[in-house]
Length: 280
Ligand code: ADP
Image (tube, rainbow, N blue to C red):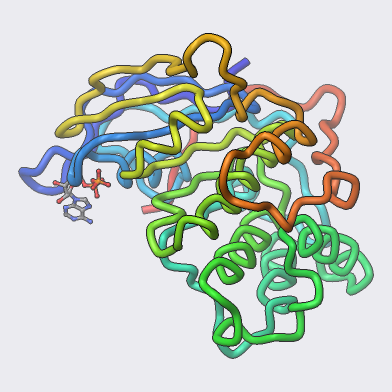
């Protein structure tokens, strides 16, 4: 069953049509690029999928199986649904008056985990995975751009989202740092998270082939698998160890598959599909 599904979704801002009648469905663990020129509707599509923007018309359906409170308190259904999604943007948006550790820990607290030991158990493996263990006591302004984005990625993954949305995640990074982020995104995807990436840099599609959605003026132009030429190893489908050794250029100093947290367990028989009421 699809993790998230759009049915005839349109979005307008006044007279301006940002998305026009999109019907799309995404499965757990998919690797998806959203491409198109500036103004094509990429960010709007990602915000709708992140349940952060209400469509003008149409439906967003989320498979709520596996969504359950992970800590004390009883989050509202809206908060629970939003726990489904992690977001990574071009701007790192880390809190500059908090350390790296506190930034990631805060994301745990927002999703209802308050126990300090439980937070540590979540945060430390993420810092390991992102290759920033040892930087946890630093403040964001003491990090390189690549390290900031890896800290932001740790924060986005703190609630073990089933869907990770990255909007131009390498827009402010040099090629080596960008390569590390793509290697990490790919690793996250290989562990079962649906990863959607909007980017201008189409080169990454050649390195990490997968499903490519092309938008133009809010209209779906194509939705297809774009693969590597025959005989070329596809990084996005190789197992993590192979992916790390096969990356042609950027070195990956970060990921340590053994240190990362396992995917969140799915409870046996929890409910089915929820038509969402995205926030206003
Ligand atoms: P992309 O991410 O592909 O550059 P966007 O999704 O940002 O495209 O924008 C799609 C269209 O919607 C553009 O014409 C843009 O000007 C318009 N748009 C996006 N967000 C808003 C907003 N908050 N208010 C008004 N218009 C918007």
